[in-house]
Image (cartoon, rainbow, N blue to C red):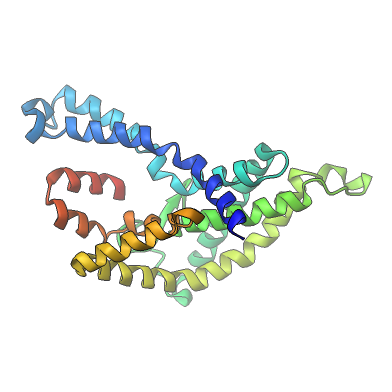
Length: 266
């Protein structure tokens, strides 16, 4: 089991490698657009500010599309054969999953306790995945779907079908299975995830108001899970959540941190 968890953690490390450069560029651009640090040249009406804002927008690509990147990255490390085809099957199934959620909540959102007419972001629990308005399952949802579809790929990619069904072999067969599987998974997600979001929000409130104890619990949970690679489940929902950023504000109280948070939450 430990070996399996370590392999899972290793697979997740592939998309994580994209973060350092993007983070450095984002940090530098934020510093260089702060008038308190570089003076009036960084005022919002200057060419300097506008050029660095363009660069900054590009640097947020990885962070704004983390669920998609993790969904694609997981099969690279876990697919036993044809990892490129596994990535294709995963991303198609993940998008299908989100389209199903969007359709379910558009039709029966009130029955699931979700106001799907709210704008995305904030405390709505909604987000945008590749242009699809859907529930914000963060990287947890994308990793879960990617893991399921990678398993399906490993099991059925090489399955031989009758000659008259040969066109449906390989990746096509995997995505067909994925299409069928995504519908009940989307329904269960719409049913369960809003309740999970409520629990996450409660924990965020606790961490942001518990002072040193809250910081210790957060750090302990994150560090103890590093050997298994599951620490991503701890920092993912909270680092990008609206409540836990209050901890950053209280620890730093800086305009730089507020600027960073505002852009991340966009």
